[in-house]
Amino acid sequence: MKILLIKEQTRRFLRTFFFTTATHHITARTLSKLILSSIKLYPVALAAQLVGMIALVATFWSSEVNEYFISFWFVCGLISIWYSLRFVRRFWRDQDKVAHIRLWIRRWTTLAVAAGIVWGVGGPAFFVSLSGISQVVTVAVVVAVTFASWPVYSCWLPSLFTFTVLSVTPLSIAVAAQYGVSQGLIAIVIFLSLIFILYSGKKLNDLIVSAILTDSQNQRLVERLRVEISRAENARRKMQTESEHRAKFFAAANHDIRQPLQAMGIYLDILKRRSSPQTAPVIEQLSVTSAAISTLVEQVLTVTRMEFGQMDLHPEYVNVRELLNDLGDECRAIAEEKGLSIRVHSVNETILTDVTMVKRALKNLISNAIAYSDPTAPKPEIVLGARRVGKNRLSIGIYDCGHGIPKAERDRVFSTFYRGDAGREKPGSGYGLGLSIVRGIARQLGIEVTVGSIPGRGSVFRLLFNIAEVEQAEKLETKKEALPDIVPINGTIALLEDNRFVREAIENMLTSWGAKVISSGEPDDNFMQRVAEADDVKALVSDYNLGEELPTGLEAAGILEEKLGHRLPMVLLTAVAADLIESDFRRGKLSGKTLPEAMPRILQKPADAATLNEAIWRALPAGEN
Image (cartoon, rainbow, N blue to C red; front, side, top):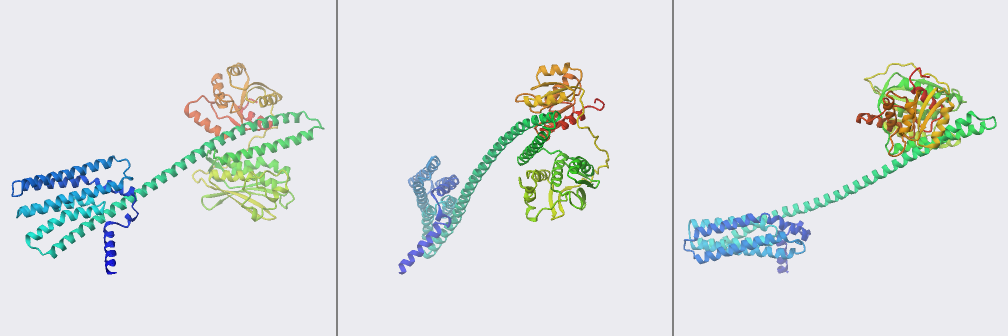
C-alpha cells in the first residue's frame, strides 16, 4: 500500500509540472499553435547554442583538450542545430500539422534530447580538462545556453525536463567531483536548479497556453460576430429590398386607385348638374359613397406611407392661434350641419413643426369629434383649445360633447381599424383609421398624443408641443377670401394627364366652366407647340407621373415656361404625396433642372370639382379672373 501511495503521489507531482489545468483540455490544434509560438523563439536558442559552441571551441582549441574530441563535439552540435532548422522549416510547410501533431511532438522531444546530450557531454569534458578561468567560462556558457533555450522547450514540458536534466546534471556532478562537494549537496543543487527551471517553464507554458486558448476563443467569438453581422446585414438588405418593393407597389397602387376615383368624382359632379328630380337622390347617394371610398383610400394609403417611413417633414414656425382659427373656419360648416358649434380658445404662441402634418392630425381629431358628439347635449359644441403647460410646452386639445370613451378602450382607440362600441353603433362614422393616422403623425413629428374622457360628458385628445420661445408669432386676424362654389374660367387651360378616362373627365369639366382646353397624355412637341401658339393660356393642370421615361409634371411645367418665356400658373392634380413633390422640387432647383419658377399648387386625387376650381382660381395672379 505504501508503494502504491508513493507512486500515486509521484504521478501527481509529475502531472503538476508536466501539465497545467488548461492542458487537461489541450487539443491537437492548440498544441500545434503552442509549438508555432515556441519556434518563433527557436532562432534565439539556436543562435545561443552556436555562439556558445564557438566560444568553447575558441577557448579550448589550443589547450590540453583533444582536438579530435572538440571537432567531433562541434560537428555533433552543428548537426543538432541543422536538424532543428530543418524541423522548423518542415513544420511550417506542413499543411496538416494538427493531424501529424504526435509525430512532431516526438521529433521535438528528440531534438531536445540531442541538444541536451551535446551540452551534457561537452560541459563536463571541458570543465574537468582544465582549471581556473577556463572552468568559469565553461560553466557560464552551459548555464547561459540552458537558460536561453528553456523558453523554447517550455511549450512541451517533457522536452524541457529532458533537455535541462541532460545539459545541467553532468556539469553539476563534474563540479562536485572537482571540488569535493558532498553528494548530498550536489543533489540538492541539481534538484533546486531543476525545480527552478521546470517551475519557470511551467508558468511560461501556462501563459502561452492561456494566450492561445484566449486567442482561439476570441477568434471564435469574432467569427461568430462576423457571421451574425453578415446575417444582420443580409436581413437588413432583404428588408430594405422588400420595403422598396412594397413602397413601389403602394406608390403604383396609390396612383392607380386614385385615377378611377378622380374620374368617378368628376362624372358624378357633371351628373349632379344635369340631374332630374327622379335621379337626384340616386346621384347624391353615389356621391356620398364615392366620398366615403375616397376617404378610406386616402386614410389607408396615409397609414401605409407612415408605416414605411416615407413622410418627408418640413418644419416651420406656426402661430397656434392662427392655425386653430383656420381649422375652425374650415370645419364650422360641417359641424353646423350636425347641429354643433365650434369654439376656438387659444393662446398667441409659436411652435416649430410641419404645419401640413399637424393640420392633418387636427382635422382627423376634429372630424372624429364631430362624428361622435351629441347634438342634444346641454352645450353642443366642439372646442379647439390651446394652453401653455409649464414654461416650454404647449397643449392643443380637441374637446367633444359625446358619450365618452370607456377606460378599457382608451389604450386601443389609436389601433388601426379599431372603432369601439360607439363607432360600431354609428353607421358611416368612419373606418377606424383616423386616430391611427394621428398616432403615426405624432410619432413622425416626435410629439406626444394623449386622450382623456369623462363618461357622459365627452372626450379630449391632446397634442403636446415644444414652444419656439425665440420667435413668437404676431397676432393675425386675416381670413381667407371666401369663394363661390364654381368660378367661371375665361381663357385656355393646358391639361396633361396620362390616364385617358381622367383626362376626358377633367376636360369635360373645364369646358363646362367656360374654359378652352388643350389636352394631351404626355408633354410632347405637339402639345408644347399648341400651348405656345395659344394667346390666352391661363394655367396648366397636370398629373405628376406622366409615364415611365417621360418628364414629370414639374419638369413639363419648367419646359413649358421656358418655351413661353414667362411664369405659368400651375396646379398638380396627382396621387403622389405633396411632401415627395416638394422634396423633388427643392432637389431639382439645387441641381439646376428645368423646373417652374414657383412651387405649384398640389391637389391630391381624388379632388372634387369645387376644390379643383378653387385651386385654379387661387393659382391665377390677382385680377385675371
